[in-house]
Each structure stands twice: as C-alpha cells, then as structure tokens.
Length: 224
Image (cartoon, rainbow, N blue to C red; front, side, top):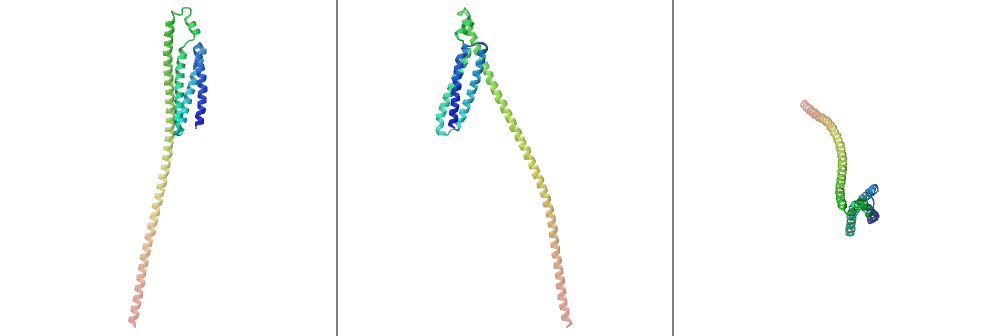
C-alpha cells in the first residue's frame, strides 16, 4: 500500500516541478503562446488534484500505526499545491519588463495607472473564470451522480420486477398446491367414508352370523 503512495509522490514531484517551471515562464509570454501555456498548466494542476485525491484514498487504507506519518506528508503536499495555485494565479496577471514596456510604450510613467487598472480587471476576470470553472465541475459531478442514481434506480426497478415475477410464480405454485391438496383431501375423505361403511357392513354381517349361530344352537338343543 505504501509503495503506491510513494509512486504517487514521485508523480507529484515530477508534475509540480514542471508546473513551477511553466508558471515562471508565463509572465514573459504574451498572446496565443501565453494562453496555450496557461491552459496546459491548468490541465496539469487538475492532474495534481487527482493525484492528491488518490494519495488521500491510499492514506485511509494504511494501518493506523503508520497513518500519521503519511497524513503529515499529504498535508505538506496539499500546502504546496495551494502555493502553486496562488503562484499560477499571480503569473497570469503579471507582466515581464519586456511586455510591460510593450504595453506602456514610451510614456511609461503616465500609463502605469492604466496598467494597474488592466491588471485589476484581468484579476477580476480570472476570479470569475475560476468560479465558473468550479461551478462547471460541480455541475458535471452533480450530473454524474444523477446518472449513477438513475442507473441504480433502473437496477432496483429491474430487481423489483424480477422479484414480483418470482412472487407471482410462487403464488401460482401455491394455488396449484392448494388445488392438489383439496383433491387429495376429497380422495382421502371418500376413502375414509368407504372404510367406515365397510367396517359397518362387517359388524352387521358379524352380528347376523353370530345371531344365526346362536339360533341354530338354540333350536338344536330344543329339538333334543
């Protein structure tokens, strides 16, 4: 388990080093080149966030006696991530001396306030963009949860339909069993009735036979 965490640490170190290098280059660029680099760094930061989530999951699976050490390391990585995000945000609204001179032209002092205002506007726009991106990610996560919930609901409905069919089949079998039991009961009742009738006949025949024997003996004795 700790080997997986260490592998994530190596990936984290490689990514953050590359991001740090690119963040330092962003203020020196302009136009499309800067836009592409900003998008690339933003994508890498998302990969770092996913790495931190994986590391967090790994720490939860580590035995309690070793977990404190890994939690401490994870906290330091999260702090480093926060610093990277702040540096990235500043780098997107910062200008190098060359870009500053290009924007201000010859009248640098008189246009300094315009540059400050431009930077404030860019910072405001970037804040709004980040809020929109976070909202978009939350919406995507909500949509994914809704899709998964719908899938779970469909599975539950399918299971309920299957259970209902099983219950119906069981009821049909119970009805057939009840019908068979009713037939068996009627047959047994008829057999019992015939047995009783036969026993009564046997008793009657026995009584007649006994009476005949008694009468025969009586008349025989009387004749003598």
